[in-house]
Length: 478
Image (cartoon, rainbow, N blue to C red):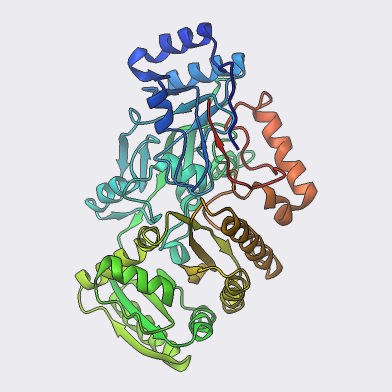
């Protein structure tokens, strides 16, 4: 659907005031500049903003918010645009807010085990900086080489290490946030305990830019684990692999990583990475454990025994850190590898309780067969978060209709099994029509009440999270 809006949202007066705040070099409303930030990593969603602005500090962000609130101009805070829910696509125009100037690690506090950073810091850069001091920041989204901490906080990003270490929200101790009216608030801090009032820090983590703009974050660090081992278990039975996951957890072992890849994913990843992954098996589990040497060795032996008892045809330890890193890298490249198959790649996420993984994998395969689609499944099996991925072609409208119906059934099945419509990708535009399936009308009403209280003029990333009548992908031009 193409929509042409004649009148821009930003008047000449508002533009002049915004330029006074950030300088002409940090304000771009050219067609080319706007086009670059009209989409994110979500296929087939595109909408031109009216301008792109790059503030240099919190004071400028606050001034921008005040002006936009006065003129009712939407604000879309944006990290690197790696999200997969159209969360940073400016569907109602307005300004896209960039943080390329606010990209510094302000402090690594070894006494309090914290790092204080600006939102534009790249996740991998932070990881490397703290590791140089023998510390560890566990959240590791698949896009960690380019994603930013601000984006991770906005989406509450997960990653391969989420099973043992949790997700982004588990490491955010405090925030500096600019509200829609330009007020600046600080939540939390370098504290192990703090129950003074509502937990506003957790409220903003995962709010997808709809409640405020994060301009600084205080993050928890932990000591670097002593040792790590990596193992690959091969299966000729998908359900046996899924059962192994449940059995490992039931035996009170929590590995760092417990990843699942099915055969179609393996074939594509090996063709892309060329590291010697087996492609003649139905599924593999990539398993890692870290910690004290004796604990790691004990856990790896127990997990290997469980996998063999559940019909694994082979269980192999990585012989070196280089080999282990190659396996991790191969898993992280799954999306890139699948994207080579067809012009459009629809990657979704649905989460179920660990005990229901086998049923969910079976259901995904049955749904793919029903709609005559190729759906490759991989993901964080240890925490029940699977990524069914469909290579398709957006130009084939009939096939795209089947893709949409298939994913609707996948989300419905996840909820039926006690799961949720998204484990880490967020709601954005993509999952908005299904949010009420998970929360119910009362849950939606409660969320809207929070949104109304903090953003009464609905300028903070409007058009996201709350239900729309359809999830059809649109291209909007201005």
